[in-house]
Length: 215
Image (tube, rainbow, N blue to C red; front, side, top):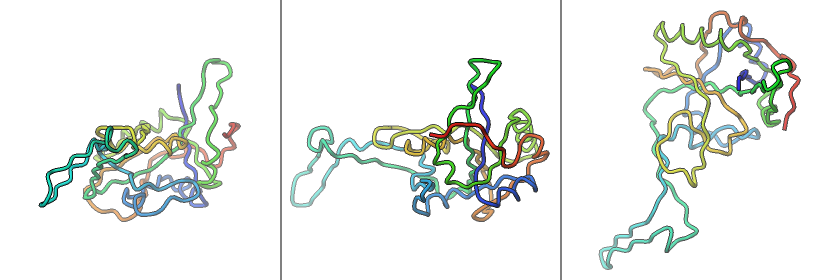
């Protein structure tokens, strides 16, 4: 299934479009703040591992070692061990995926989008020429920018057991249908970083009124 990309926000979206850039935010900012009404921000952002605790071992100098197994001694217990890389300067730009249902080639349909996305802001940039967008990103990579883009995979921290990447998020954020761009920087560029992208208006439009059902 093909897709378009949507960047929603406040009035700064117009400046972003007219000057031809996307705003990236340091990963630590997402970890720092509490969730807002649109459920943004996540203290688990950037977790690289999520291992389920199988047992708890208690050591005490006056007693024998006690091992409590989660599945036997603590059936209601749920705990995880996480690892975050906090020393790297990672910058994230989040875009929302709008899938295109092409079962009928003559009448392609835009798949519904969560109404919560509207709380991100009333302005939007729609990236509708994905081929040109990818070409411009590839050109930036060739020029030396360490940037990567992927669809985000969602997981349940209470059940998932294993390694993660910077393209994983907790399942409660699945409504965002996020396509994520990540810049791996060798230096601290501040809390936000604006990436100029050539020919911005050749693959995008400003405040396009989408005929799409929200759920």
